Every structure is written in structure tokens, then in C-alpha cells.
View 1 (cartoon, rainbow over the protein chains, first blue to last red):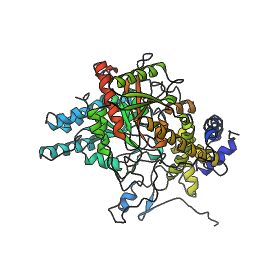
View 2 (spheres, chains in turn brown, purple):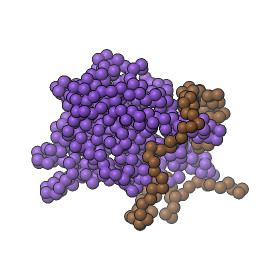
View 3 (cartoon, each protein chain N blue to C red):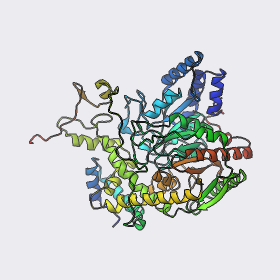
Amino acid sequence: MSSLSRDEVANLARLARIEMSDEELVSLASEFTVILEAVARVQEVAGADVAPTSHPLPLRNVFRPDVTTPSLTPEEALSGAPASEEQRFRVPQILGEEA
Amino acid sequence: MIRSSAAEMATALAKGEVTSVALTQLHLDRIVSVDKDVHAFLHIDTEGALAQASAVDAKRAKGEKLSPLAGVPLALKDVLAQKGVPTTCGSKILEGWRPPYDSTVVANLKKNDIVILGKTNMDEFAMGSSTENSAYGPTHNPWDLSRIPGGSGGGSAASLAAFEAPLAIGTDTGGSIRQPAAVTGTVGVKPTYGGVSRYGLVAFSSSLDQAGPCARTVLDTALLHEAIAGHDPRDATSINAPVPQVVAAAKSGDVKGMKIGVVKELNGDGYQPGVRARFEESLELLAKAGAEIVEVSCPNFEYALAAYYLIAPSECSSNLARFDAMRYGLRVGDVDGASAEEVMNLTREVGFGREVKRRIILGTYALSSGYYDAYYGSAQKVRTLITQDFTSAFAKADVLVSPTCPTTAFKIGEKSNDPLAMYLNDIATIPVNMAGIGGMSLPSGLADEDGLPVGFQIMSPVMKDERMYSVGAALEAALLSKWGAPILSKAPALGGVA
């Protein structure tokens, strides 16, 4: 069960928004067989009675005072933008023409 | 002068024997003469460093009270944002990006007048153990240029071993400070998780990432630790408690009556003979210094590597979603009619390297419906078991110890086509990150079979970081009197210059 087909990797790449060549998909699929076999070992020890740990610190809902502090100017915020227009990020088309 | 410790440089600066400008220039000259061979730096900020140095000199001339490391130069891992200075994380996707703000670590360095020389090379997004995954080419180990300097913080560690900087900042998600320290004969500390702010540290695996100090001596590491640590309201996971007194601990180096626990599972098969020999020798020295050596067992550590390679990729698949070609960084394929999704897909294909893609895909799989419980869910349970192992072990010992890595530095290219063999480098360092405790690596000598540095790892409980500094300082002193000179004096000369 611990293996992935080329098509399964292609689906994961689509979900992760990475355009991959066929060659890349095939070689990743073969590597995953080895990697998944190794990581599947976690299933050997973890019984139903063990609580999961998502984080090393027992923190939740950490608040700080709601005070306005200096922040970036629009120019600074846009300084690394691949494209911008009228103090906004300019992005490629998001919705299809026919929508 | 460049071979002195940071503490010695600070004393010389305070006495007026040297200016920060002169000291900074010496290091910049050294970088020019050796970095073409070592490639520790991705960016050298000559102008910024000299401006900072001259500002410190002016403050000192006016008689202002300065921090202990004021005017001493430092190398910064390229995963931390520094305002106006290129920050790439070793990735093409961030090539040319200049952050509009300082990370808290950088703000703290500036507040302490520590001079930032430039940004150091690393595995892309800190994913790797050799610095071979940098999109800008590998860093070479100053002990043997054909070998890896460790990773992901290979640039920071190599800059110390090559005397390009006396101080450096690293980040450690599964060993990225400690393993490079081990293989380059330098000192590196991963503080308790939450001890140093992550604000402005480009996230790889948020529940594991921790920035920390690197240097050539335990005391220098402690001085830098205190300079960068402390609560930060901008990082919700930053611990709101006083910084552990690590400088005092490093100065005293007292281990009398301390119980040192040897982790049975982190030594033995798979560890190079020379690594084991240096480890045993260090234990004897610590016993002679008055510590009691006990054995502890952490049976679940054998599952730590498997759990790590599910948790870290899962978190990275989410964290790296921010590199979407929209607000900063690379954008590819933005032609008329191209959709945002097509641009994202193309940009991420071109911008990310092989290992980063591998981990994003693995994480996407581990988090996907139908596999979540079996992979990510089980890994989180293993994390609980590892933390419980540490709790029982710390009930029997004040600190725990092991070799930092199973082997000395391997050859560049030797493991780059075998992800699993590469992952095994971190087998002894990963448990520390899983539990969020502190870990240090310091040099314990050279392996007989290859003459390369071996690291000794010390682990301390949450917010008891001072303990690893006490033990580290005691061992460092004992080893120094045995060797007669620091370990780096045995490293070969670089580029024809001593």
C-alpha cells in the first residue's frame, strides 16, 4: 500500500499548484515508494490511547494589547510585488471569461 | 585577530585596541580571500556592515554604555529577514527579494550593535543536511573542501570554521544548527522552542523551527544567545519568561554533582567508530570534572525520524503555499490570458528545487483526506511518546547527551541521490525539536579514521538552557587542556592564507 502511482503524484502536484514534467512525476513516484515505507513506521507504535501533539508548547489563544503600532507604508508593502498598480498588487486573471 | 573568540574581540574593542570598522574590514577581507573556495555567503553587505561598525565606534567614542558584543561581526543565515538586504532562503523563488522589515532576531542584533556582515548559504528553505540543496550552489567544508559543511545552516557553520566571522545565526528544525556545527568543529545551540522569536524567520515547519546562536566557543555562543533571546509579542509562540542565564553558566562551567544521562538509543550501530570513541572520551572527561554519568532509555526515539518526515513536510506544504507569485518573489508565465492558477503552477515549478517539491508533495499526501490519520495523525502521536520519553529521562538526569551525528562530514554528492540516506544524518538531533527542548553541539575532537571533526550533543529540559551551557563549558575546558589548542587550529589553511 505504501506506494504512489505517477497519476497520484500528478494529482498531488495539481493540489500543491506545481506544474510538473512527466519525467519528474515518474521519478518522484518511485522515490515515494521508499520514503513512504520508511515513514509508515509511525503506525507501529501509536495506539488509540495516545493523544496527538501538534505543538511543543501548551499554548492557546495568545493575545497582545490591541494598540496601533507603526507598520509598512503601501510603497514598502508593494516593494517586492512582481506587478502593482494604483497601490494594489496586480495579479493575473482569477475568474474565467465565461463566468 | 580573526582567530580570536568573539569575547576576546569584544574586550579588545572595549579597551580601544581595535575599532569595529577595522575589525569588520579584517573579516570582509578574509571573506574576499577565502569565500571563493568555501562559498559560505550568498550576499556580502560590505557597505551596511561598515556603516553599522562606524556607528558603534562613534557611540563608543562618546562613552555610551554598550552591550557585551557591540562591534563584533556576525554572519546571518539567509532565512531571516533583514530590511533592504536580499533574503533568498537559498531559493530561486525569492531571488532578488529585499524584505521591507527586520526579523526580531535582526532587530535584536542591531539593538546590541552586532555588525551583520552578510547572509549565509543554506539548503533551500532549510530543507537538507548538506547545503547541497541551495539553488545557488553548495558550501564547502573548510576542513576538506570536497566535503559538505552540514545543513541546512552549512553557510553559517562554515563561515565560523573559515574565520570569516566569529559569530553566526542559524535556525534548527531537525538539526540544522547542531549538525553543521558538529561537522565543522564549531559550536551551535538550538534554544528551547519559543526562547528566540520566530518573527521574520521564513517558516519551514512552524512547530519545530527555532533560531539560535553559533560560534567557535561555548561562551561566545552564550553571549549571542542572550543577545537574541527573549519574549516577543509578535510571535505568539514566544515564551513570556526570563531568558535562561546562559552566560553565567558558560562562565562557571561547573558540573560537580550533575547527572548526565547517556541516551542508549542514540549510540551504537550506525555510528562511525571514531564518533563513538570521541563520545566515550568526552564522557570520561565529564566524569573526571565531577559529573555522574548514568544511562537512560528513550525507546520511542527510533520512530522520531519517521514522524519528523511526516510532520515537517506537512507543515511545509502549508507554509510554502504563500509563495504564490502574487505579492512578492518570482512570477513566471504572466502572459496575456494566463490565469492566476497557471502562473502559480509555473512559478512554483521553476522557483522550487527538487527537495522542496518532494517535501511539499509528501506533506500534501500526508494531510490528504483518507491518509491523514494513518500518516500525520500517527506522527503526532509519536511526538507525544517522544516527549514522554524525555520527561522520564529528565527525571533521572539533569541533561542528556549523545553524539550529534552518526558520521563525520561526507563527500559533496555522495548522498544527494538518496533522500533516505540523507535524512539519517538527523537521527540524533530530531527528537530535541519534536519535544521543543534545548540542544547544543560542541566539538569533541577528530575521528581517528578520517581526521574530521566530531560533535558532542547536550540536551536540556524546556527553559533550562543554562544546563547545556554548564556542561558544554566544562567539556570544552577539559578538551582544551588535553589538546593544548582549539580544534580549529588543526584545520588546513584556506586559499594559501593562514
